[in-house]
Structures are given as structure tokens and as C-alpha cells.
Length: 391
Image 1 (tube, helix red, strand yellow):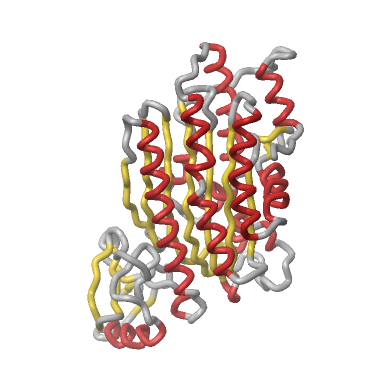
Image 2 (cartoon, rainbow, N blue to C red; image 1 turned 90 degrees about the horizontal axis):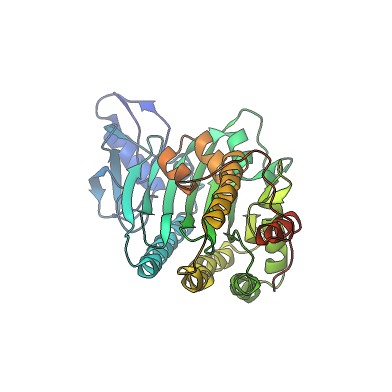
């Protein structure tokens, strides 16, 4: 029968075997796979994957079967001995901890709504946990999504995920080539009700691909619709302190990168007022980069929630709400046209509900809208057109 073989990861490779061959192959595969007996999404950490049954071969090796497809699955990088199993374990465990910490912190501030957790599996390998809050007292919609996926993808999708690889001779990949990959990431967007409360986004991720390629990426950024200089000083100050603990060059470099990355090119303006953004970070010991990502992820409540507490009860007018919805229209434009995570997820057959979780429930477009000169709306438009330093 046609099956997909598994060592605790999901994969896309399909093979045909004679009767009895799966067990033989399992034993051979176990030689490549010193994985734990219990599994998380990546197959190597705390819990077995959602929707996956398990058949034990020994105390430290097992097959998984995708219960939906009824097929066994395996990760090509792991089989080839190219997987950094220890780092996969660490990253997934850390991102689960960040997800739980952020969700708990946000629920406490909202005081009404709770995150609904939705476990899912990806047909071509991997799965995730989407945590979504809707109809809250403070937030209209908030999501914190964990994804651990693997399989193969076109080299063009790899370049969409990391454009710094384009033209890199060390990557040594040909156009149209199918590239084995592993990706573990946590992504979040939070859209508050009050126009004086900013939207916030963060994403931290770890990639592996062919030819021993690996990198970290991510960042945290903020999108207010009105300028409060003290709020921006606080938000950027938290991330400057986090960055400075690891490398004094991180904050100025990553702040500039965020201003450039979050530009809506067809509008000539930024999506928000920045933060930090980085990608293709692989210039030092991966354990050092891991610690930086961990601290940056755990800093989200400290950077964001005091601003929400400060403004959640501010009075606002119908016109201010209308301006918020117009700016959310810009948020939608960026996410659907430029956002790497959205593009990568759609190109690799990701779960659409989780990918588009980042979009607000409500947005607005008006023909040729221009804020009145000298208005608070015009003030922040100047910030969107000319990014500035906040700390």
C-alpha cells in the first residue's frame, strides 16, 4: 500500500512498500531518529501531535500516523540527518510558553473574553494551535497562533519567506527546485475596540531548509491611529532594553528594518509606528539567537499592555472610530500584499483560517480620504510618511 513513513515528524515523501516492509523501514528509520517517546507538533518535544495516533517501536522511537489521512508521515530533513533536533525542541517549547504567557496576560486585561484554542493538523506535514479571542471588552479580536510545519516547497516560496537568500551563492538552489523545510513560528495580532488603543503584532520563528540552511526571524511592532509620544517611548524602550542585552547594534538595526519592512509601498507610508524586525539571523551561535527571541517574545505584555490599560477607557467619537477603521484598511492592504508570513503560508498550503486571523473584523475604505490639516489624524500621517526615533 502507498503510505507516508514517520519518525515523529510529518512529511510529504510518499513510498510504496510490499507487505511487511513498513516494519523493516521503521527499524531502519529509527537508526536515524533518536527522538523521545512523546511528541509535540514537531514530533520531538512535550506532547504527541494533534490528531495523531502513535504506535510504539521501543521506549524511545515511534511511528505516528495522521489519523485524518490514515497514512504514516516523515520529515525528509530528519531522515537525511540534516535536522537540528535539539533546537527544534527548544524553539517549540519556548514558543508554547510565550503563547500561554501572552494569552493569560491579555485575558486578565480584557476581563471578559477568553482565548478559544483550536488544534489543527496540516495534510502535508505538521500542525498547530490557534488561540483566538473575539468579542472581548477591550479587544474586538486577538489571536496568538503557533505553527510547526514541514515538508517540501518550491524554492520561490523559500525566497518569499526570506528574500535575503535571493542571490546567495551558498544556498545553491535552482529555480523550480523542491526544497525540504521545517518551520516553527508563533504569530500574533491584537485589534482593540478603542481607537486610542493601538493594534500590536509579533512573530518569532525558526526555519530549517536544504543544504544545512537555518535562520531565525521575527519582531514586535505597534500600530496606533493617534500619536502618544510617551506610549511610543515606552514600547520602543522595552525592546531597546531587550536588544541591548544581546547586541547594542540590534535595536538601531532592527528598528530601521521594521520601518522599511512595514512600509505600504503603494501608499508611500508605514503600516504603524514600528518596533523591531529581523530576518535571516544566522550570524552567531543559534543558542544565543534563541535566547534573544525568547526574551523578545516574553517582553510583549510588558511593552504593550500598559498602553492598553492607559487608554482602554478613553472616550472617543464616531469620527475617531471611523479613522481607526480607515487605518485598519491599510493594515489589511499590507498583510495581503506584502506580509511574508501571509505569502509563505498561502504558497505552502497553510491553514487559511490561521493565516488570515491577522485581519481585523472591521475595516473601511473611502475614496481619496485626506485628514484635515493640523488635525490629530494629519499628525500621525506625518509619522507614517517619515519614520522617527522614539528613544
